[in-house]
Image (cartoon, rainbow, N blue to C red; front, side):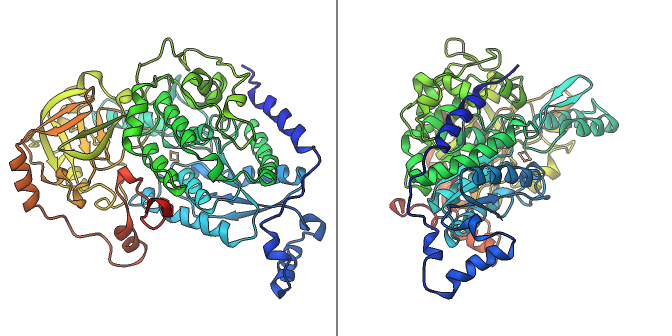
Length: 585
Ligand code: FES
């Protein structure tokens, strides 16, 4: 299928780029037009790198904020993407300078990359603020890199465009299309159940991640790239173009040209990231059945521009937004197919009657204008409003005496028969205990029980690791059981699936009621009525909570100490209390 949506925007923007340029006061002039010695030395520094004065004199200076790292395989191609951005900046009359920021790779970082999202956001913010930059192009991809870039850029508040690295190519094993890492998890379960051999498992792993780029299901990375488009801070089409498709560097080049236009128009994040834009993003999140992690990240990004998003907004919009996207882990297809179907613009077009179409975007056009000529090229993949996959959105917020400040479930990726379920709790004190006990032959567990794990939240984990997708006990796997209700204060990878309740807030380490659940207690999950309750009396719950004492914090020094003392709970986006916008403090 030939896609034309990208090209039509390129033509519109090129026309604009060649219009006579308006003179604007550049932020960078504060670094150069002063009598101090360093005003000259800064130019000398550019000359020392081989640039001549005509390269930079009186031009907008555009930072290319790059989370490239060989420790983050999803972002390992971002140096090439940066070169394409530079071409665009030069074409439009700017001066591009690439700089590195911390990179967060899901596979390598222990205990979890989430522990460092806020640190990376500080690196982004301070690198922008401290340097003579008029605008910035943000290069990210792997799960936490995109929200960290957006949080930092929102706080710095100079014109910014997000360019993500794009999804990997589709995996394929013996003719079966595979998605990372939804199918890694599925086949790992089959390995534990004894249904595939180690050789077959090695073959699966060798067939599933075939190229640079981020996971190519609707996991957190794809979801956050989609959020960038829905918010209007990424170019239309950005989210779904495969990492190695030639249209990815073409889009990056366009971003280089477009950021100059944003500087001229003073289009800052605070003008793009409005409440209306966040409502559009939340509707998009529900329509795509996006990652539960996106709720934490959107709350945190909004908090940086003074907008308070409560979990209730997510649930309210979920009730009136249909789930349309037939993509793993909730459906059948992969991101490459989504690109051929028209990507996020085609999805937005389908739900356009629910969107605020007058929101500003970094193209200088409204969202509604951008969607004018967009088409959906595959109705099996992007369903219509008339024939959705589900009438309601892909995420639900639960409340109850077990989750006074909320918990999350992804009904689109759960077993429908377990969405209303009452069962006996089987409690694990923490992740380590769970790993030691889950496969024990004498573990007292039945398929209708509810697996509960605590001490896995923002403080308890620490860093709220993606441990919520608890493995099923081997003794039940061998009986053919493939899903059970699982509860925790952890997060769940966006690539995971099952009847998994996560983000139980407050977490057990902060004194939440999850800390006092005992094996044998009865728990009631009622997703249609958005309830999660521990079936004990109020008196008993109060008594247990009064006797409860949380485990000591993990760190006594360094970044971990700062983290433990300033991290907010999941319903506040897990940002640091001192980083949220001062109007929300
Ligand atoms: Fe980077 Fe999945 S490991 S996006």
